[in-house]
Image (cartoon, rainbow, N blue to C red; front, side):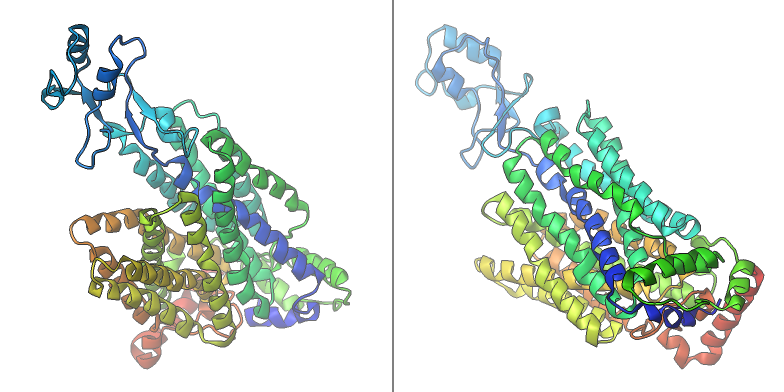
Length: 551
């Protein structure tokens, strides 16, 4: 199969006919539930105001009941301790008055042995109030989120390899079903442990669905449409799901009801199986030329155009049939060229994920309504995605990604120069930094997909996404460093992203080029071109020998 001929062979379909429009819309709608699942812990895992519970059967006066909970340094009720109940009961029975006859601050304290009372002004219930994940057990809340991202990390690797081996469509709908069904089962979780196990599995399905839908659209849609699909398509519809989350949470204050409602869009997406085709490009890479041509002929009929008698030359069919082979994660490190590309891209994904996730998680520090803050955090991504789309249409990929990484990182570096009392300026820089990194996050997907060939594209996206998830797992610890020095997280995140922007300039340019189909057709690193004898020649030779061995 001669890969560069694929776009020419399918040019008869046009760029934006009914087939492409339907596929674009359906794939984008399948992305919306990902915005729910990935960020639902913002509300499900929120910790409302709480204090120790005093049993109703405890027979003490109203004065002593009010004085039984000590105050902290900020004159608020203590969240994790109370005055010893037996001593308070004795004082009450003796008729002594708190702060009049007894210095209450001298009474020893004890833990909340009878549980807690939670403020229900914002939430009816969360997983925190359901299983008392406060005080000595508060470590379970961030662990819950980490376990979800661990599932995302696992799914990033597994789904890519399975998708490259068994096809895009089947993996898309299996993982969509996993995400939806296990999220539904979570509603009935009897314990925190069961909830976490189900959340881990849902995380595996969430990222697998997203990456596979992205790869499927990139391979079927024509080059002029890929840019808008990767930015104003999948990324924007993820943000739409993100924006709908606080709206649903505002009206549904019980975590089980909220989670139940958030599963509904996933069930509505399952019938799309009969409307979304397999990737003809992937079928062609597997030697299944007749199936690929059948899909394209149906697309031609939908678009009202006539397909040629032979879409792909017969020699392509023979080449494809003879090149049936299995690719794996190891193929991303078979030669110096692809190995260096993979390492550099993983570093870029790691850096942009740390920045994006850390800034998103840190929005809770903003004053005001939590539902409004979450909504604004999602809205800021919309202009960033629009800018990313405009850049992808006109500018080389290296310029697009390097400039947005440098923009986001540089703005964060300025924060340590801002006096602490000028909080409004700091917040503005943080939001502008997220604007730049949100644009970079949407650009890195198509930029990565265009560099890798069809035979390992999903595996490569999964591997890079794995590096991204490692970054998301690290993000809370970057925020934690702010306790030692307020601007330290921004200095580290900003420096890391500026450095990543510079490193991306070393990668080859893919703007305006056809998608590669085999490892041997991949572009060469910039420094390899400058050291042709030392790197490029040996890399190309290695790749050709590797392809021959595979045949």
